[in-house]
Image (cartoon, rainbow, N blue to C red; front, side, top):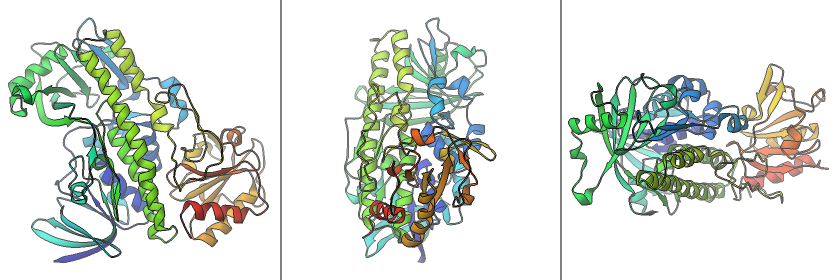
Length: 548
């Protein structure tokens, strides 16, 4: 049997597994990803990419590629409701771009999963430390002293893989989760669903009838735009207790379903594929067992309403990767890894709950308990979810509280209130740089970043890096019109940078500093100077990293 040694083994080559490999490689961690299927997804599945996930893609340098592959925001970021696509009662509501887009240098986007996975795979395979193997299945695993041993098989040939840690991103029916004996709890299955992908020319529909997602009542179904050309999906269901099954969806039945949804009896249609799936909502009891971690659908499954599932999983990967890297490099203590479940499970549970609320609205609409206008208002309102995807905060040993209170918007699902309070995502603020405007988010790299207007903190950051072995990049942000101090060192990201509002928006003032983790969340903040900034920073960093 062949043998292979690697820092991290990732099981599963969907968006979450590929994202894990991308982020680990950015940190220089050797990674082997195995996926049992021969290639990336051939069915669209997920399509909505939230603002936070687009920010991550931006940091990986693939935002433009994703936007080129997806659907124009202005045209398709909308929800529709009606009897069918051509019915007189059809109503449409577009996303609140003007209200929500300013919170980020990017924004929610639509790109079908089959296209997105190709982009993520290509990005993962570019990583010098990543080995991506499709058509390769993990057949066994066991935890051993200092790591995990697993057997992977491809083409009848087996390889023994020795790794320090294993990340299971192997989906809702996770074999790894089952092997570990971790339960996933949630309500009974909400629906037995069928997705019918088809090709048709719907160019005759005017712009006010084009939407990413349209909920229809006659018969009850949903229509999704897969691209901005000819590919679409109809989602409908069946009742097993009434004798229904996926076998019922013959080509004739699928053609009839598509034509009824569009409202054109003789519409030329080509059926491209049919996929059965379960609508469910569940969260694993734990996201870690020893040296094995669950991510994505292996850890939590949301209903499709809201498009949260894939995004929540990608943020699992973003949270976990830097922690694994810090421990593997010896910059952090093993206890840092305990903060993965402490941080991500509450967010996953809230996300799944919100997806259930969205599903309930859909059920009420399909059952005729809401008027078309009520339905579209509620559906459109719930499509605006920046509070959920940007406003959450972590509470764990990897965050040092500063005694301030978290924002408390009246509608925490829809409304995002920017905050640099420790635990929260570092807010987007436009800065003036030597080459023009730049977002604070674009200055955050795969290491810790210290944002400050005080050069003494910048000098201390370099000394802290030498003392702790943990890379810490200082970025000085000056008041508009200010000149950089002699001690300013921002060469890694260019500079100098200036802003009249940054220090206030981040709560750092002219003398303080904000320490941002590699995943873009604030770890520590002070609004004052320090008599010994090196000691203060070193103490904060070693506390966050669980170093003795």
